[in-house]
Length: 235
Length: 336
Ligand SMILES: Nc1ncnc2c1ncn2[C@@H]1O[C@H](COP(=O)(O)OP(=O)(O)OP(=O)(O)O)[C@@H](O)[C@H]1O
Ligand SMILES: [Mg+2]
Image (cartoon, rainbow over all chains, first blue to last red):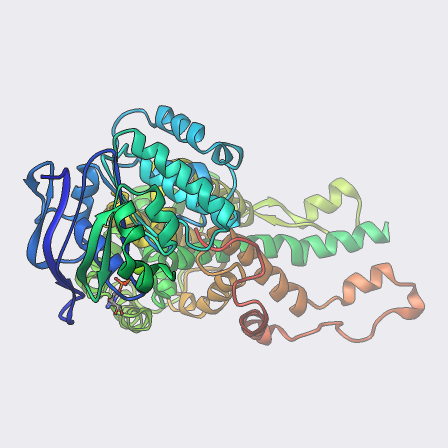
């Protein structure tokens, strides 16, 4: 049994159709798990379901063996699950430092220490700490988004396309940061469009198609699976 | 000498009145912008809510006067502000509870909330009509002038007198204090930061554990304080005519939009932009030019760009021009 599990989740938006059906995703601490799949496959929806942003029609979400399916998203964040959404994942009108502070609102202890740790991980954020996030470059913004999510010192980190819209060099940099986070014993689930690169740093991966698990396996298995290659890796 | 006289004329008839009027507009505009930025609708009840708070200040002033309580040289109304603000906040919170909250939870579109606020406006007007009636009331007491024209002339030996009414000085000083405290609160406290975060990105704010109920509550409280102070200062300066506040909504909205709706600092500056534009464009400069031009060039006309009857047209034109060319406001920065 993995540390963080979504089991046979079926869910949709409001009274609309099911977007994910019987979809299962899990991750252990110290592991990076990639979710791949075509646009509209339900990757973001699966993540939102695991955070509780939409109600499950069936299935469950477990953390450390406990069923958390009935917890509100806020309570799940309190329990140590951090989420970086695909869009609007920062407070653009707030400064870098304020973004980090807001990220720590659920903590009761001294946040300065945590902020220092984040600055150490992302030195650029220290440099830009008094600048409004809306004025930063795309790559820097993604670092703010990651930094904000790390402020609660999560045990589970869910990243929805953390490298969207950044250059290959910045992408590598972001991936390096993500690996560093994983090394602090965090369970990381990430949705990625850059499938090959993502699989190369992931321990395991899932391929979702129309809301269902289509393939799953270790990073290498998926990278070398001829069918996955043909349909999702463009080679 | 003539040059100094000309400057005094400008100060006396344009700059000091504009700073005063601008402060009153600024307080209203920050109110509009806060509600817009956080509750996400244009509150058409703004003017009448300001009037509502002022009404309590008027009634309490009369009550205190009847008890013989006063503030000496200062207007008695000043001591009524805390209590009037309290009544105002109670009113706003009950309106929010019984009216706006329902639409907020339903996630109604902003236009619908704006229309609902029109309903609140009519109700508020009716309540004011019932409680105090539509009559014009003066509730200013204490020393009326800080500096009288005659004294000024005597001291300086100039032809032109400078008058500073105590309401003008009180308006400017109180506005500066209130606005400074508000900006300190918004920018430097945890609650202020959560308000700005909520205004910026509601979903992410919720995920960060920011309590939307608390944000809404604090917003109404701050709005209530500003609205009451702004309304009382305006009433002291001009006299309390309950339904004039409705008309003031045009310059107030213009100020909020000029400043970039949702941006409190912009709204603050916007108040002065509108006030100066209105007063500079409707002031008759004849006297001013008589001082600075040689006799041969002395103007015959009033030298007035627009009749004062058109002062609302000034706000309206600025509003239209800004919406056409700089819909995000003339100042930098976006929201709270
Ligand atoms: N808030 C929403 N309300 C209703 N339907 C939605 C909502 N968000 C997404 N959907 C629908 O759910 C389906 C899956 O969307 P989702 O965002 O999960 O896809 P995705 O795999 O993350 O795609 P992408 O790679 O483009 O990000 C789409 O058909 C989309 O139209
Ligand atoms: Mg997505």
